[in-house]
Image 1: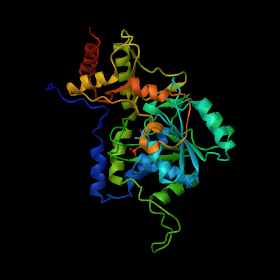
Image 2: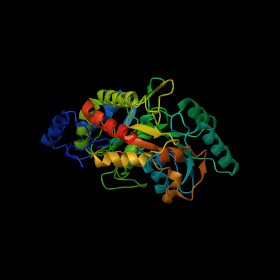
Image 3: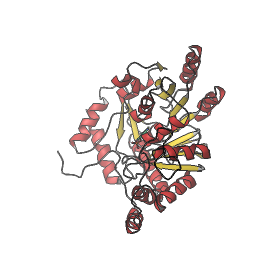
Image 4: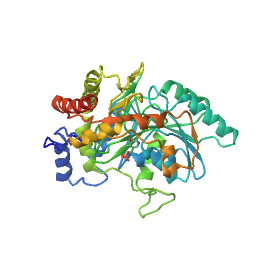
Length: 377
Ligand SMILES: *Cc1c(COP(=O)(O)O)cnc(C)c1O
């Protein structure tokens, strides 16, 4: 073991401004789910992404759930979802009693494969089950192949829920991720590129979606002096306290993206002469936020990612395997899956390296040196 400080995968990184918004909230008694921080946070999120409307919620998962409700997804409906993602991308499909149809990824972005997507849509339609929605994820902040995927979704007229939980600050052909789908969602969980300690948001250009999302997020209370409810709602609203943290964080989002991209650049340069390790370059037109820097180990050499993970762990450094494909999770064992087994290969050969925006050059050098040591014979 080492007595050097612990290095986490992707810890929160405060700007120092959060405390100002928190103090205002406490001083003025705006400590629940209404108040100036909430309004300002939603406005700033719109300014940053270019979305017309934003609704701040208590998690990204809640935002996906509401998006499914807004698109009318009901029990028994099918919803397309990538296999290579975090479980929160697909759990809300089950909340609705709907059926996830998993699409594997393609090797250039690690996101939804357009060929497999089209095949799935055609096959489901032949069986008389046109998918009700497509949940599209940008894993690790890397833009998916939006041109192809949007063309397919438009052709078959299936709305997209853009799960940009990991991709705030990334762009595709200059346009911010989260604004391509009918509805976009972000997460402000503690490990994301910016955080509200825990939280999320739904963004859209359609006023009706935004109004309905706010209604559903606040117990779907009808406008009446007494408690009157016509439909099923949830307690999903963000608190004005947490929105204050979010305001302090949004102010430095651009810098946070730049630093995460620098982390990627550092690793890329360090591993340039190590043929066993490959990183994921951006495709033309794509600007990743490099939420996490990920490496792939070539299968033709003896070191596997678990060896690296344990070597780092021994030195008090946190690294994590890539997402285990959702269609291989016991929870989702009985749902359809389309595409080549790319996600499975990524899971076997990949590793997420520490990627926080407060990493120093000393930290990064420590990490890289430990990895190099494993390849010394
Ligand atoms: C983090 C994450 C979510 C869920 O966000 P929470 O705020 O943690 O509920 C959804 N999708 C993806 C891809 C995520 O990484």
